[in-house]
Image (cartoon, rainbow, N blue to C red; front, side, top):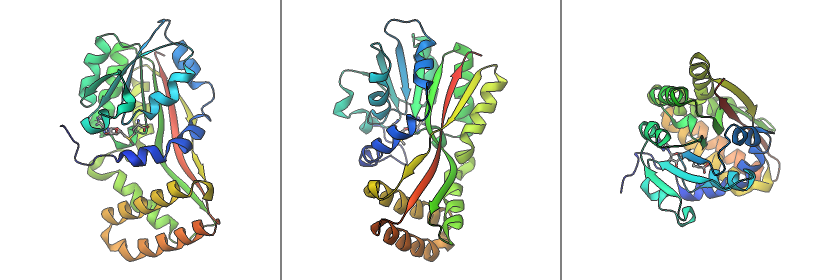
Length: 260
Ligand SMILES: C[S@@+](CC[C@H](N)C(=O)[O-])C[C@H]1O[C@@H](n2cnc3c(N)ncnc32)[C@H](O)[C@@H]1O
């Protein structure tokens, strides 16, 4: 089985579905406009970084027509999820996309992927979209912004270290949206953008607790000298969550990319 160096946990993907759905619904009209860009009766759709299938599960009932799904992911374990049913599954990375579109894809999509990609992968994505003029809907890219209310004095330092972790090894990370937008625009593609933040509170306590715990760990991985500060921050934030006294706005962006 092919497994990436940093696999994404399937239970994390399950935990975020409700927040993702509410966030994506803020990109009003994006799904309808994306699917209207093809007149295929049953479009072939490539979902890059399909994971356990949350993107397809969100989109399929909103398309207004049946679709043939091609699920691409570099993690064979996630692609083995039973909910994928009989959808076509391809284990691979961005370098597999060109051939998949050439084989007849009408639309391309991904969710919660772009901020994980390297600059070279984002560049390749823009090049492939431009080469094939394939409409794309890229949802839920982390944009590096976060607001926690009430504020804690260490929110900023933890957020900066988390963003540095996302930007490890030269990745655009929190700048992935801007990076891809610039490449697409330079290639003559149109790009529309909608803010699709997570708006969370104690009503999503398991997601918020996991998010903050992983945020703290990533911050320390990027800046080990923050270990004590991040531990104190996490303890205080989990206490606020337990007291139902915490609201979060975690920035995400959806992009709708067209032939221009
Ligand atoms: C945060 S998960 C999102 C999964 C799914 N789209 C969702 O919204 O639940 C990111 C997914 O992209 C996959 N992935 C990350 N980098 C990739 C790459 N370079 N090529 C292919 N898949 C990748 C991961 O294995 C994972 O399934």
